Length: 114
Length: 114
Image (cartoon, rainbow over all chains, first blue to last red; front, side, top):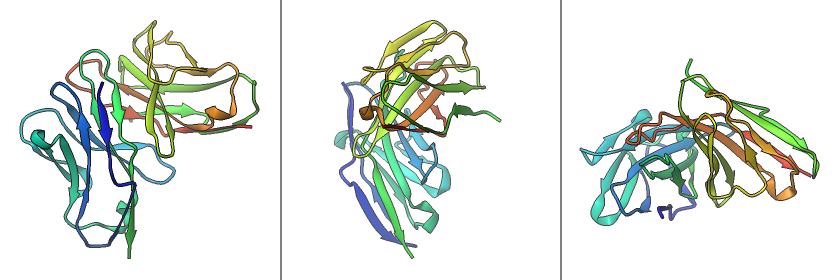
């Protein structure tokens, strides 16, 4: 069965600093990987996704993520964080096939200091 | 506007009082799913549906029922709610294509069971 680990529960960065959120997955086949963001009181918004091809994927709001098969990782990055980026971030892996199931990590809460 | 809607957004109820949370999507998606979100646990899948009249259990189905009589609607039913079902619930939908697991989420329903 697939699983996702987000080792950092909370991260605090200063506005303008770079950001990297870690995500490690376990899945036997080629994974479909996603990053979602949840702003306070809001639903989940898709930031970016990886299905195949270029291992560096660009998303919305200036985010990018790099798929590293050898490390089973899909870390999310942003070169310069804005105060509005404060939110909870979820990494997820898709099962593919007919199930369309997403398995989520436990989330990383990002705080941005002004 | 393409969207997934849920009602109600907030609900406080008492143990044992049957309730239904509605979910509707306007994207003609075949696949729909319910998740619950709890602190430190991320999102866990409750039930999913691959098409009309086709439903199956996710990871945490106990205490819940679903139905899929129409393509656009996927209500979540709690016949006898208990306090451990206090949670934030999300409905999601996606195209059924196996290669495309991108799911669109509703805004969430915050349920409190007293």
